[in-house]
Figure 1 (spheres, rainbow, N blue to C red):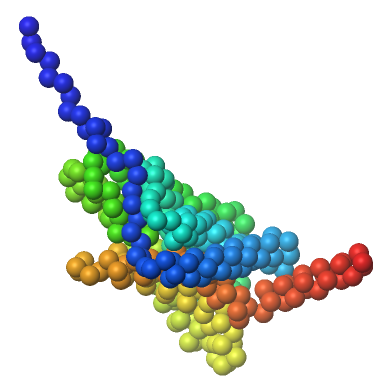
Figure 2 (cartoon, rainbow, N blue to C red):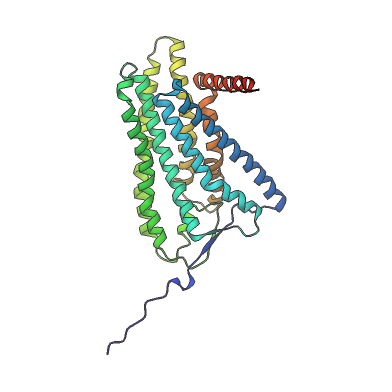
Length: 322
């Protein structure tokens, strides 16, 4: 009869874990880095949690701008927790490994929160555009329903855009080597470890992420074009100053966010670009989530006022309790 040929054994040498080389350093420096990132992690969690709490509990912050800011802080917390604790754990371990599914999970959530943040920042620039260019119609344009839809849209765009490439990566054969030259499971270094042709996955990755990133960037640029145009036409200097200060913090965050991403993912690849990419990724995963709440609240009188009132209320309660 016909001879049956056995199927090729792909799983025989299937990789079960990956090694993250991160930043190779002597033991003393690893301990120092662990302490630095522990402080960064705590400050990020506390800073963003304070913002979320203040926005939820105080009616003075129940406006679209703060609703978006609250969601941004939620994203910052999740984005930090996706990468930083694992990186800290690896500072203390000799073998800096992550499981196969842990790696793909980390990669998925990193890009989910990253994409959601870009779209949310674009929605925030649209909110500033509505506030400055159409102040009288602002409450109608940015109604509660619109704000909720924009935020849900931000989360959904992150969720669905990353889903297809991740499922495809899950189906690729990884039969060794298993060393990722990064401190987390970034998409490109992970893909290059697959022992098969990855051009289709790379293409789909590119086709899915490009419209979202370019669309967000375009919406932000168009919004700011009209915002600046409107501000320049304001007759009084104090009026111009006031209008500009409501956008300055958002503009700073957008510049840092888009700037580092363009630096990592859009630059032509060079032989030594990996070390630059690692540093730029470190900015987006550890530094930005810490800076964003500071940037947004540093010059914001309303948030500072609410914070002072909350602290005073708490102290008063404690005194009455004693």
